[in-house]
Image 1 (cartoon, helix red, strand yellow):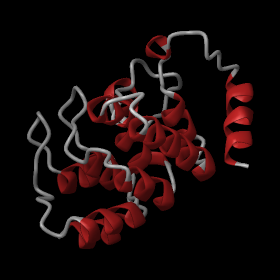
Image 2: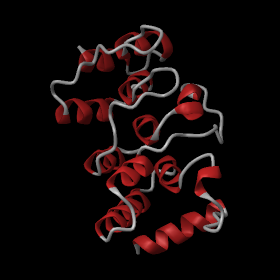
Image 3: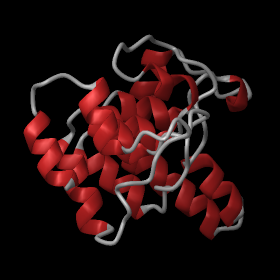
Length: 178
């Protein structure tokens, strides 16, 4: 069933395995994250882990594939356009995917420290979009995480949620970050 889900995803995307994946704006994993397909995300991560176990890819290549950068935005999203122009897989997951997908990426070793070209970490994306469940998972897994790390413009996740996000869910987000 997981392999069938990947085949369906590739068919829907008109994915061509013969084309160098580095030329695609997003990796297949990132498309699966944006599609919020837990079964595809888990299958892709399992395939990558198996490739690493049998020696087809090194640990560094495994990490690169999980944390691969977005090359260009395939779609324009108002709230976090900067994420799609330059983020990594966890930026996409913290912005759009389910908690299960975000957790699966963390379980596989995806970076929580990587920044996009604007200096934004994934936590800030979740804060701007008022993704309470993602923020809770993040802070449960990393209780000592410094939520006051600013981006390159000296904006913290709390500031970003106040400045860039709407009012809906604002107080809950502020409570979580404080």
